[in-house]
Image 1 (cartoon, chains in turn brown, purple):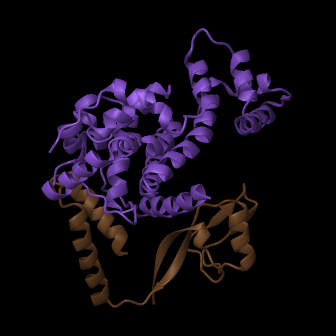
Image 2 (cartoon, rainbow over the protein chains, first blue to last red; image 1 turned 120 degrees about the horizontal axis):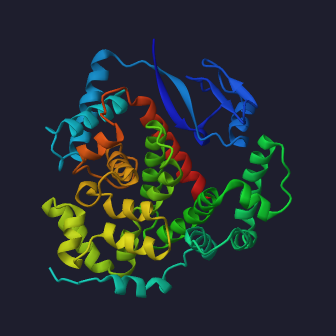
Image 3 (spheres, rainbow over the protein chains, first blue to last red; image 1 turned 45 degrees about the horizontal axis):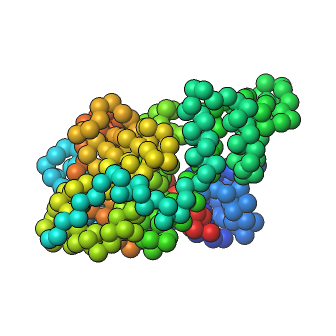
Length: 105
Length: 285
């Protein structure tokens, strides 16, 4: 099973979510390792310490074909966003690729 | 399409209809920038705003602890942290609520969400390139960058709708569409407002140049940063209910900031995405 890392706003954190990166708050008031499954207390801690985001690890059960399909759909959406831009400009092209990579994984 | 020329005088003459820019913030900015002013006057102004005074005390206490000194009054606190820090505290306390008030009254929230997104992008980009000089103003500049939009929505709503139609139907850049109808674009108009409120020149220039930084400014990092932040927020689709478009990205601005978009940006984009959602929700409370 593959896993992907997802950045989420901490107000969307819920018990059972598995951390994908170390999470600390309040000048080391608490520290949670990657792989830790959030408890209800942890979610309250995040809120209390006003953490803005956390990184979670999410199982990715898509096949290679599904991943390719998703990427193609994301690319189509992005082409609409970039419709007025000159995609042969190297900076625009790199930005396009970076956003595509981020939104497809 | 009918033209409706707008001048700086007209813009400033209608300011009293809009929610007032926070008086304390304006007085702090004026005092900090006035070479004839003094610390006693600044401390007196700070003391009249409980939220700003509390933050000044908190920052001063931390600085005092580092230096093993005590802070018992607002004059000592203000002197200890310095005028620039007082200015940053005043901006960070006063501006978000003011923009939220304007945006929610006149743009039904979409503009507010976009402003928050650009603010977060600007702040994250500033951290990413580790540019200490512009970090303090990055978020505020992002929140304020479309203040000219809000004025046009409020005072020229019908004509402004024509601009948006022109942009959508003819694929014209919004600034060019505005110039063809009003003789001025929202970026320049916004800089007039910011200047009138006494905001730092770097923020006024960034607002003015956020669409086309190369045309007006050389080597002004906050102008470049705000431009890239605005493009990035549209590229990432951070404003969920409206489709932002990417028309132009200044290679000069990217180069000046050291942003080549070649290294892995997933962590930066992830933080921007998540923090924008958090801030939109948090600042809406």
